Image (cartoon, rainbow, N blue to C red):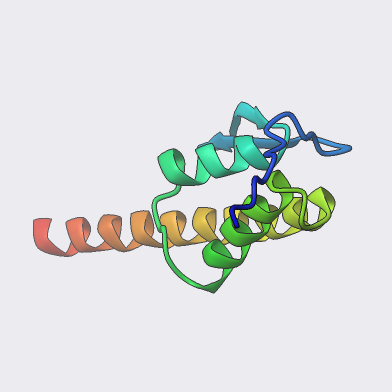
Length: 102
């Protein structure tokens, strides 16, 4: 027997998550479907525990299987981790460039 799952792409969080690059807000993520799109297109690091937990929670929220606010918290954690990793990578690249140019 087949089961039809109605997806809720229009589910919104009570408060949006503001996202950006280089100290500027460049966008707003308003719900779990936005978060899934953002993670698949804008995250530099698409692996690791935080990413996978957020991805799963957002999928479950869209499917109506978990609280969207739980997905929001996990998305924020994964986004923060991605930002830190990008910053560390940029710093390492800058250090390497300085070292090789001297």
